[in-house]
Image 1 (cartoon, one colour):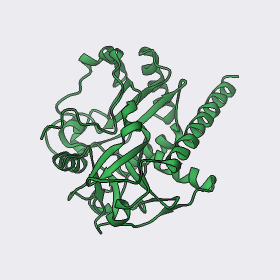
Image 2 (cartoon, rainbow, N blue to C red):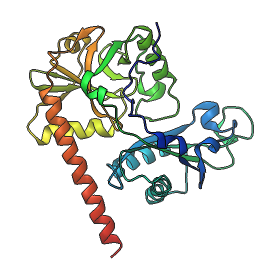
Image 3 (cartoon, rainbow, N blue to C red):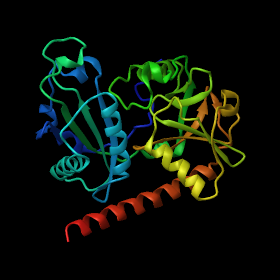
Length: 317
């Protein structure tokens, strides 16, 4: 079976401007064709690094403070020290956006690794040149077919592990677990993997957090084994603030198969509908709860962006 044209949750509308981008690499803006790091880099060699995905709206990075909290908590947890502050990170992202003529409909992948190693071995002390910081910004608007058709999921044997194995809350470069799950889903004829936790309860997909709706009640996993997604938490908070019943709980594929709605959350696609799970169509195709959440989320982004602009203006007065 070929999956060459299979959709993914990160499908974007084609944009020819992405052929001529400037990438931030360790303090320099270079053309994407020349944006390289050493083969000795700890990120390339070992997956030793952390990353954040962010979206640009009207010149501001949505929920920037939340993303920086997650990033710096992760860096601290793995003793990866950088000189940059969150304000410095914002400045380099803004400089990269400006160099690419971006004010909105743009997505960033910010990557920080332990840096170049002096020998091709594992020990962190072999990274002695300081961290590597790269920011890839692309003109990126989620493809319309994602909202129309939805994503096909397949439950897979690869699971999200226990925190003392590799805590899923790390947004790390070490993504092999998720890549294996994605491959298993593709081989099952689906677009993305629905991963279970070590106890067999529904957890997350290989790339996004997962929600279902049953009788107008929104369910998601306990959060014990999934990425602490910024968009995931915003959706939970929006439900609580707007009278939508929401539960973080254990539930099985049995409940997921018979859900009225299902959707994914992530910084890139916000809320992406799920069309089917293991070949079973989810609900009737109507998605009133997700549609309401999507509208509330757009309002929340607008509020966050306006607040950031107001704070920036006040800081320069």
